[in-house]
Image (cartoon, rainbow, N blue to C red; front, side, top):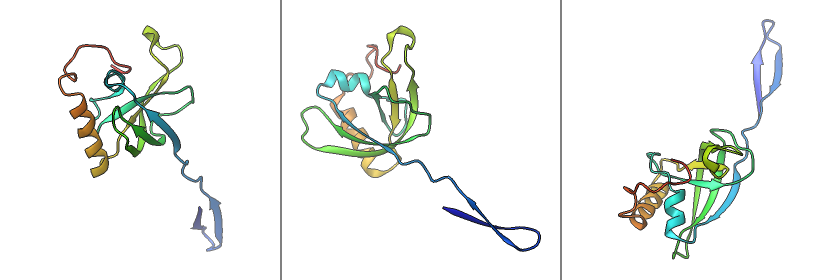
Length: 132
């Protein structure tokens, strides 16, 4: 991308701008409801999932995730953002990875509702998760 700006003498100078980073693509296959409970992040208003990874991410990084849920043959594409980072060697032996917040759109909202339906009765549990 190029930014055109005018200087005092009306000569045109060209300044290159950094391109937006391309989102990483991650495939997440959740095979059991207990694993879904441990990965789901209900404190994100739009929903989200914790994804174990050793790759270095920063808060706000775009991430494209293809999610498979237990007993569901469909894969759900989500263009989210990193909103949680658990670093290597975290306290209490937490798994290194990132929490990806779902976008605020209809497809992500439907996925959030589907996950919460699968976890009905478990969301109020005091069992530990991979984030909180």
